Amino acid sequence: MSGCVRCGANIVYTRRYSGESLCSSCFRNSLVEKTRKTISKYHMIDYGERVGVAVSGGKDSLSLLKILQGLNQFKKNELVAISIDEGVEGYRDEAIAHAKKLTEELHVQHIIVSYKELFGFSLDQALDWKDERDISSCGFCGVFRRRAIDEAAIKADVGVVATAHNLDDYVQTFLMNLLHGDVERIGWLDPTYSDDSFPIRRVKPFMEIYEEELALFAFLSGIPFQSVSCPYMHEGLRSEVRDYLNEMETNHPGMKNVLLRSSLQVVSKLSSEAGRQSIPCTVCGNPSSSGVCSVCRMKDLVNAHVKYPK
Ligand SMILES: [Zn+2]
Ligand SMILES: [Zn+2]
Image (cartoon, rainbow, N blue to C red; front, side):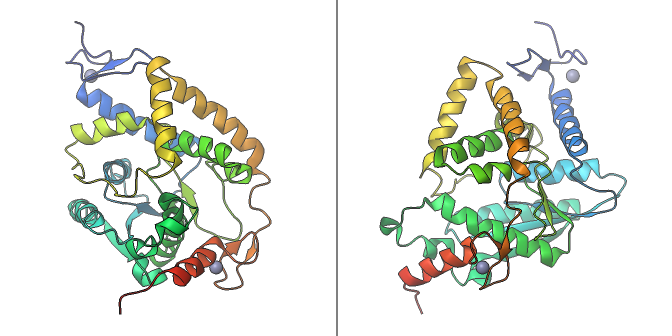
């Protein structure tokens, strides 16, 4: 068996879609390089800008913080790690502990905000009335998490927030929007999308990297794997879409890459119309499409259904 195509050392991974076989260090370098290229291609981060990094404490976000810190060796940008504590018993504590440990190691400032302090309830409390709602737990949590990251980003005084969404997440979201009939939301997937009514940009430096490769990166870099997964994860459409795409990729290597390229073309055609007509929410003042934003609408739903323990 021949060695790594770049340096001849022992192979740890072969990209099925390209046939490229790499050793541990060349494989890891290839992901760092790819991240750098994605950031530059879409002008994700400006020179000198303060950058928020959303760190859930899962392997992808820990890898993101590590790679961004590595790319920032000349300290042109200041990084601030942002963690959201949704309040999921027995799940989030471990992740936040991983995030804390890495931020201390890398000497990065770390801001943690909780659903409880922002919205008045934890995710566990908010999801208590599961049987009566027609929205999945992830859909529900996603709306609040988006807002929580915005609030934390304001607190951290950053110009941009980087999230660890990878290629798999990106194409899953694209397909899910199609399956839900949310064509307008597809425009929000524009890598350079910004909403004029909210000044902090969101970017996804891992959007061109397969989830499988990030998992291997984390493993090879000694980044801790969280032992428990979110208890709400297996609800809803996303896990079906994930399985479907993985099967397609197994049978047709490279298909996720093709889907990413197709998605980006559709996204660029739709983004010019997306969300430009937002108006301030009459309750909280954040951007909304209908006068009351989705966070305020969902908060009302939760408060109408949940009995809080005093
Ligand atoms: Zn090599
Ligand atoms: Zn609102």
